[in-house]
Image (cartoon, rainbow, N blue to C red; front, side):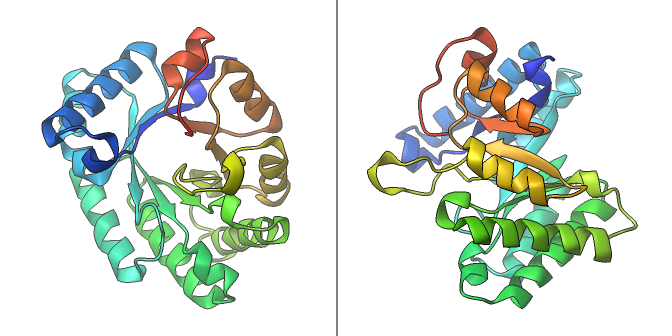
Length: 247
């Protein structure tokens, strides 16, 4: 097992959140990409504003590291049209993988029809363009029953309505890393949460994100069956050190 093969090395802070300038943020995501190329991680994951620039960089480096971005991030409540517009631009800019935030509040409020339409429509756009699509369900905002229900809903849509596409190219992902929990409670990839997702994802893949900061954390997730791990601590994980931050 080579841990780097599972890692999506991630930087999703805005300049306002990090205190960096726009140019410093661009430098940081370029550093992240070069680190991913050097470490041979599976992917680098950034906000949509940086996709075009990183596409050029990764191509210049002649690397097969995948380039991912986030859509309707981090709240997931922008609506279908906003998700489509953002996704189409990301694809045009050269993204290989798109991680959408599910409108988890709509799901919790019982508006499953709205959520289902967004999942089917956006997944189809990605899959027909031969992109990987991941659905972030924000597990810290959900009860166990809701985690099970939403994971099953995504699986049913993909397996029944998008059956012409490889179902393993659709992921269910645990967390944005930005959801604030009380008393520093876990906001993402616990063994319990990932276990629930794995049991209900069927033929879909699962991505663990949020709180994976050590090699031991990553190994536990891989043993549970996840195909990918989203983390801002990729270099520390590979080197056996402890990463900082919540993602």
